[in-house]
Every structure is written in structure tokens, then in C-alpha cells.
Image 1 (cartoon, protein in one colour):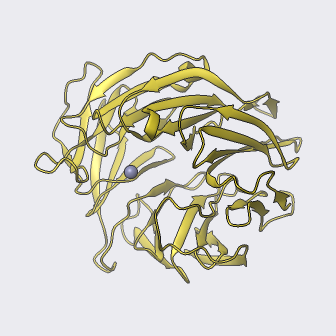
Image 2 (spheres, protein in one colour):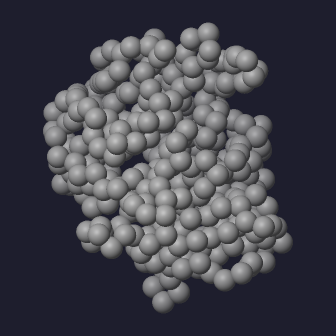
Length: 376
Ligand code: ZN
């Protein structure tokens, strides 16, 4: 598919792919495309190759998809608002088979307001929105967001900062600001209980940025390694996994969690990624060198063995997680330099499995690749 974008002036800023495939081989895929200049989200049916809906919001947004794929959160920094969008695609597991339910995408009515919304984390259906300008996490269930409710549980950090929170069972894990320099990255994780009281010590995590879940393990990226969180005896158990001595200087600032296989994938310098096995006694970190600088990376939710990395030479690389190396590379677009502003329009990887969709902002089109075969 080479979908010609309706209006070439629309720049694809951030795409969130929602896809499900049922046992009887029905598929539904939608892309949610935020416009970097206008307050709107365009929803594209990638199976039919057509836009299905345009949703008006308050300001240009970054998009975040929930784990279930039923909800997309539009984080609008300039409007101090996070708006919930029902993706319209849901998958009901009937045990022996599944049913796909497809409805029109729509704004649910949920709007959470605060200063400088930044990171959104969905953990087991509890969504924590962190507002940097307030230093406050606002938490609601995905169900409440789909029902159009806007009541939240608030947990406040010591100071405004660029932070993150995770609703982890009855507890909340919250970034701890750098008290001397609150405009720098946080320095650790504070655990609070249902009443909002701190539990245990603050877990040190200098330059905390990046979190992800894989299976029953949650991880935060620090300058020194990872904080690895598991369900302990009544309270979350947090352990520090230091970067191996044989790694070059560097750190991860974005983490992705494997689906189906338990691993984490992080950036590590501009032209490398690192595969992390949080349970390994030895060799927890495997570095993968890329031919040029990295533009974007994503894990494959359908084929657990693979992840994808897009590099600035216009290549899409398929990463074999088990072998720890690039298995295939495919040239999809003209080069996209990583020089310039971090927010310049560049390709991103959306969707996975049989449908890797890469929006090409320079050409204003969507590329699909590399697998065209159906799954067995
Ligand atoms: Zn950030």
C-alpha cells in the first residue's frame, strides 16, 4: 500500500497504530495521526487505506495508546489537557476464539487538565498521567476514560519536574525530583500507598527517564542502569540492575517492553540499541550497533521474536531478539537526518506483525513493509 495522503500539507507528527487480528483471520488496523500544527487527530483505516474520521481537540498533540488498544490519549502540552479517544477497536477473547468489535472512533468526553502534561503510563488498565508543570500524577482507569469520566486520583511529587508515575496495584511509583535542580531529570522512585504515604526508602535512579513493562516486570531507566520492579510481599520490590562494565559509556532514556518474550529494548547512544534481559544472572545487556543514527524503534506485539528500528538512512531494520542482531533491512524512504529539532517530522514505526506501517512525512505517504505474507 502506498496511500497517497489527501493533503500534502499535513505533516505526520506521531502515529499510534491500533490493530487486532482474530482467530478467523479478521483484521482491523487503525492509525491515529496527530497533526503537528493543528489541533486534530486523523484516524486512518490501514486495511482499506482510507481516513475514517477527523477528531477536533484543543492543541497539537502527542498520542499514546493504551495496552488494550481501546483508548488513545491525546497529550496537548499547549492546552494543558489530556483527551481520551475511543479507538473503536476492541477484541473480546472467548477462550477458543476471539471477536473483533469495530465502531467509529470518538472523543469519549474525558479531559484531564493540568500544567504541562508529559508522560502517560498504562499499567494493567490504570492510566497515570504526569503533569510536569504541577509535579502531579493524575490517575484513572481505562474503563473510566472510555466511560467519559474525568475524576482522577492525584499524587503530588515534592516539586514540579519532568517526571513519570506508574499506578502499580494499590501503590503508586512516582519520580523523585532533583531538589537542588528541579529542572534536571529526577533522581529516584518514591513508592506511596493508597493513603498517599511513602513506603520504604526512595530507590535511587539518577537521570531517570524512560519506563516500560514486560510481562510481570516493570523497569525504569537510570544513568546507572535499570530499576527493576516486581510484585513483592505486599509492597513493590525494587532492585537496581547496573549497566555491565563492558558496555561503552551511555545510558537508555527510552525503554520498550517485549510482548510475549520478556525483555526490554532501550536506546543507547544515537546509533545503538540495547537488549536487556532483566532476569539474567550474566549477560543481561546485549548491544546492537546500527548502520546510522536511530530515528525510531518499536517492539512487535504479534511476533514476539522481533523488534524494529528505523534509521536515518531510510532503512527499516528487523531485529531478532533471540539472536540479538539485525535479521533483515529494507530501504523504505529517502534519508531523514537526525540533525535539527527533535520534533521535526520524521518516519515512525506504527503497527507490527503483517503490517509494519511507516509514515513518510516528506512524501506525505504511508509505506508498508516488510512482511506481506499472512501469519500461519
Ligand atoms: Zn520525557
